[in-house]
Picture 1 (cartoon, rainbow, N blue to C red):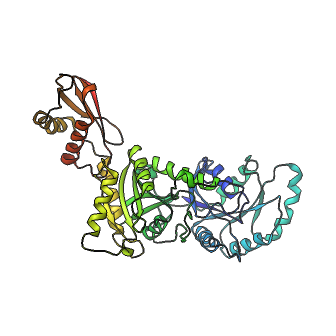
Picture 2: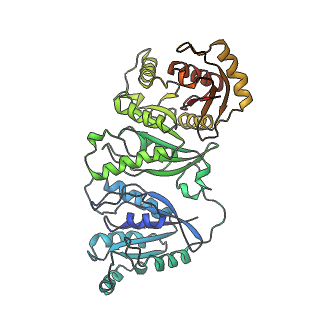
Picture 3: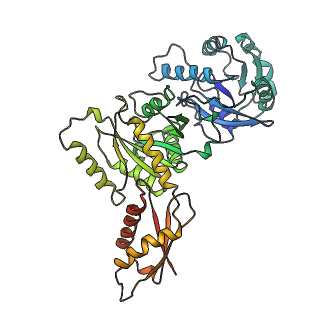
Length: 446
């Protein structure tokens, strides 16, 4: 598919237009400038033509902000990816020096550029936009991203200028995800954790490009960023999320929406890689995120990052492993890997493990195999009597769900204790290998 990039200085309405084009509120929109930092991809269509849209951070020249140089790099990468560029300016504020800086960059790109004058909300403003012709970067379109007026004429021109493509253009381990076949058909792997655990560094290392901004400042990533990984025989959608803080520490609206996007990414994923900062240890917020993953029935891999910074003794690795498993009990059957993104240690192993967890989560066991395996175990270790009631389990089957759910049919389901349910879960894990996958078990009247 062709790719359309939306660029411009901060707070001209790029994310509002992005959300309108993709038909979802995927990008955070706020009156504060500089909300969008990373490139953000989505899919749109117009008159039967599908294309991809990139939302970028606001481009600011000669700024001392710690993020601005990285945002400029993201904008330049988006322009390189794109086939067409929507250069957005603000009709209310008029032509600014920052608009001219962006225009200088776009003139060197030699890509089709559409000058989009946003916030033209009335006919009185139509004649006030002529000053933007001074930028000399392309055809001018007056729109209102909030109401949608003028976007039809803009999209007609954009679609007409798109190059005709044949086949795919997915590079090895490189963004954007939107050039792949249907993303819904491949595993969705979300990288989650507390702020500054190394999530974006892992994404950039896997993709071989600076897909997301990385700084020492916690909370750098705000939106959930989707990218396609396709290398070494593996293909999946990689989702970088904002760091999830405790509720009491979420102090601003933008960060609140960032955390909500991260939680929504967990809900829409198949497997979550929970990144833990080895220097900070496995703390209560890590347990909360793990519980959130488990409650949503997602596969999980725990990645202990920055392991190279830990002073190690003979049993340090084993002690840390035992500590984590004790804190996540009773769901202890989880892969735990010790890595260093900076040193590139066990990075490929982490994604291979996540794919294995996805395959286990998708596993379907036939009813015959289930009964042939589990009923003899139940006969040898029957449920204990409760109120002098003898509990007989006669049949077990797996429900057709995206994650493993098993139903055991018996004569007194209300009397089966939680301890025996955990025994059956452990037997299922041992016999059928559900490492890293939450299991649900129900008891029903036979």
